Length: 120
Image (cartoon, rainbow, N blue to C red; front, side, top):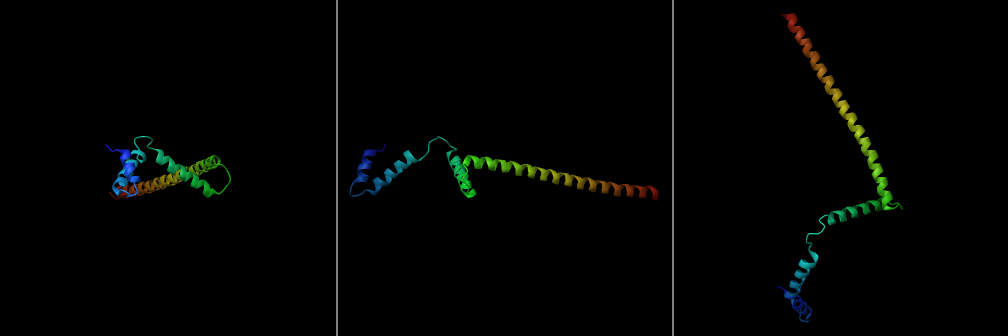
C-alpha cells in the first residue's frame, strides 16, 4: 500500500526526491486520470461535437449551430434523393443493356438453328 502523505512530503522537500516524484506522478495518473468503466462513448461524442463545431465555423455564418445542423440535414436529404434517382437510372440502363444483349444472342442462336435445319 502506498502512503500518499509520505510521498507528498518527500516530493515537497527542498532536496527533491526524484523517486518520490515519479511514484507520486504514477499514483495520480493511476487514481485520477485513468478511466474506470464509466462512459465509453464520451471520447467519440467529444470528437463528434468538435467536428460539428469545426463545420459550423467553416460555414462562416451567424446562424445557431442547431439551425446550421437542420439546414445541413435538409441538404443531405436532398442530395441523397438525387443520388438514389441517379442509381435507379443506372440500374435501369444496365438492365436494359443486358436485355438487349440477351435478345441479340437469342437472335443469333435462332439464325444458326434455322441454318442448321435448312442444311439438313
